[in-house]
Length: 249
Ligand code: ZN
Image (cartoon, rainbow, N blue to C red):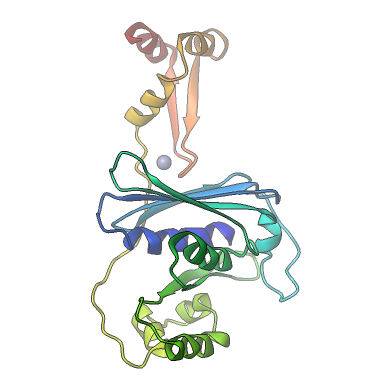
């Protein structure tokens, strides 16, 4: 549930970037049992992510929901935007509730000075299988009036969970029209859960750990296996391949 909510935020914030190659990283470091989460997304809403400790099962929250706030507890949320400039932009805020939607509303206000409503949700069945996941971000333009703000607050107060709406087959366009009477669709973007890991990238990673470490992999383990933390693909490297790498270094 926590990862689904953060992936949803990532998919939306990824596609909000200007350039297709712009990369956004959402990172949570926290004291709760999940320990931390990382999600990256690009301008084409290609999103991937992982949690530090996926084996967390808590009793439901008081509201009878999956206790994401309890899994995260105290911590910080960082948003890193790499737009191909010298220095990436990085904004860090303390977690507010750990429910992720609230934390992003706070982030947008505190770090980007943009009042925003962020709703992200994951719906599961009785066996904790994911049924649906989704969300929305509403941001005020600078010329928004007090009236606009109270209109949105009123609409959002008792708004049904987006994940339930999606599960019932409501389209994003229909959800928008439930909030705003007058909607103009200016763009559409498909979302992709995908990983760009490769054997070449793993070799690059291996080459950074040093000859000595590589030699001990040969001597002690007769090879090595690297698992991509984003998609769990396993990459195996033989003694011979490690030796070749050492020779090249
Ligand atoms: Zn991968």
